[in-house]
Figure 1 (cartoon, rainbow, N blue to C red):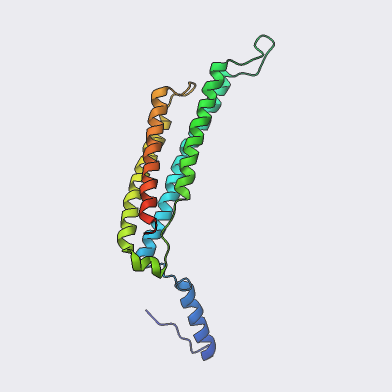
Figure 2: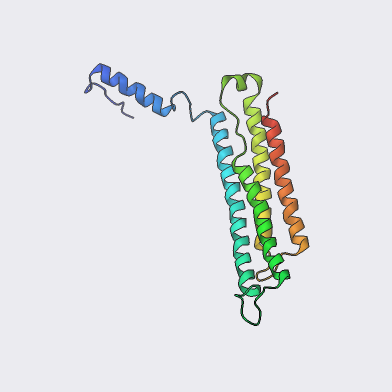
Length: 189
């Protein structure tokens, strides 16, 4: 491969351009290509994907809720001015579950990331900590996907039964437990 000639530029410009290019490639002191930084970026990407999976589950629940409302909560008429309280409770159940999933999704996206500073590196084995975070990431991905799969199997045009709600809550509890372990790993000594 041919090297780039800087003969066409004055030496002070060539040196300055080299420094600027080097600083841009290294991110002003932050080298994107170190293994630790790749693992840190992967953690962010995984949590974004898990958040997206949970957001997809919420969107599916909202479409089920809309179907349910169209079927069981029609606009009021003279004959039926008030909706059935049982149907209202069924529609509210969708909202409550959506809210619980949304809370976990927010916690996943906002979970702490290990910083890249010398003090943190001095007191911890950074690569080992990041590998353990990677293991938690795998559990987060699996738990979120199982939850999303469960939500997609819920029947259309019907309220959520108690067993399905308990399964959803169990998955959410599992995700919260993983987030708790993850936070303990990153907490200060």
